[in-house]
Every structure is written in C-alpha cells, then in structure tokens.
Image 1 (cartoon, rainbow, N blue to C red):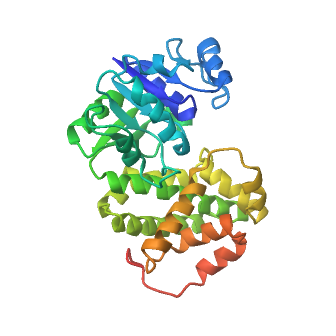
Image 2: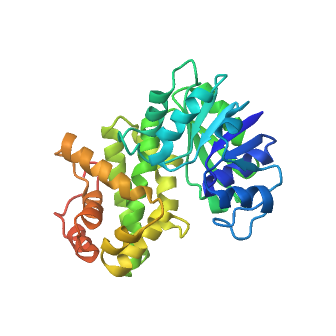
Image 3: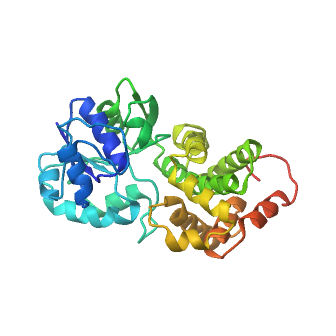
Length: 337
C-alpha cells in the first residue's frame, strides 16, 4: 500500500513517519531542493527538526507523477493557498480511484471555500473516494518523535473515515472518526485566529488568567460562528474544537501563537506583516471570517475576531484592543453572547 504526501514540511514529515511506522510505503512531493536532499541523503528534515533522524525508506521527490503513481491515498499538507493549484496538477495523473486526505487547516485563498469543498470542486466522484480531513490537537514537532496524540478522521462518509482511522492509528497516534465536516473544518480554521490573539496577550505581558479567559470566550465565539455555518455544537467541545484550540493557543510550537506574540511584544502588527515570510494561517483566516460576517451576518457578534482583524489590517494597537474587549457591555456568560 502506498501513500502520496503532498508537501515536505513539518506536518508532511510527521505524517510520513506515522505511516512508515504503520508499514505503509510513503513518497513525499516537494519543491524545495534542500528539504528533499535532507530527507533522501541525510535522512532528516533539519529546517523543522534539529534532532530527528528519519528512516531511510521515507523518501521525497520533485516528480509529482512518481509520487502519485500507484498511490491509494493522497495526503495534502501544503499551505492552503497552494492546495487548488497542486490538486489541478494531480488530476491528470490519476489512473485509479484514490482517497484524498486533507491535513491543511484554513480556507482556499482564491474562493474562501473550505478545503474539502475545494477538493470536491477539482475532482469528480469517479476519481476520488469521499474526502477525509485529519484534524485535531497535533503539533508535528511532537508527532514526529512519537508523543501520544489524538486526532479525528473527518468525513461525510463514515466508512471512509474508518478506513483512514485504521491507516493512521498506532500506539502513539489515536484516531477517532467524525462526520460533522462543517463543524470540524470551521473549528480547525477559527482556532488559528484565537491563537493569534493568545500570542498577542503573551507578548503584551498578560498571564494565565488572561489567556484562559480568551480561550474560553474564543471557544464560545467559534462555536457560535460554526453553528451559524451549519456545524454541530458538540463538535466544538471535542478534539477538532476545544482540543485544537487549547494546543494552538498555548504552545510555543504554534506559528499563529508565535506570530501573535511577536505582534504583542511590539504592540503593533505593521512590522510583522511587512516582514513575515512564514505561513500563518490565522492571518488569512481572520480576514475570511471577518469579511464573511460583515457581508452575510451583520448582526453576529465576533469581538475577538474583530479586534484581531483591526490589529492586523487596520493598524489597531493591540494594548488598546485588549481594553476594548474588557470594557464591552456587561452580560451573562452564555454561548449566545
């Protein structure tokens, strides 16, 4: 059995090791010669993992046709802005029906669609099995060294989700199944916005009390929004909701948290936005959600997202936005407000 992994980044490498441990043949597709040489020659991926030695049969190549040939599963780990263009290159290479597994979190940059919808817009039902997303609290830095982790295989089709569950599960990665694709994908995207806010608080010097309050009210905000889009409330209290939210808002491994922290330290976002070269999904996601609410749900309240948006895109001062949040109209605690 062969799995094609689109990407040679940290998550691609972590998942490659999981599948290799499970006896699956893996071949990774990349565009960075240094990463490919690291994997093939030095059996590491030093850009992301300084002290991890990979197994010699984990391989990478720039030849997409070789990666796709004979694969039963195609796993997407490239940044969301590249998902559609890469899949359009994959499409003519397919010879048999495959299962596509989305491990990217966010929205299609060109259409603002959920990634599962993007996949279905590129391929026909005769080309692919039902789409599955692998979502949950999982930093690649821990998965690659086999630290205990639990995630969800999310699909509209329970049987396909169960197939992917078996593909990835082992004694350090436990996979659950879930059929609420909308709730899981919106949770996975929205938590990145809250993680940016959490990092801002850290950078400004606020402590555990502050971030606990932010995470809790962030959970309410993303649950309300996800339900508005068609997700189920209970999904946001599981691994793809609160689980993913906690780890992304609390870990130094999180790019979204780190971006927010840098912004908080300087109390403005202009320098970070001008010089950032890393993929920080929460920055793009914040704009997508903000614009969607403004256009389609003008009565909906999203105070945390609005403040993060104003910091990122309207030169708002983070310290002042914190004060605005704390001085909002007093109310009872509720998922409704």
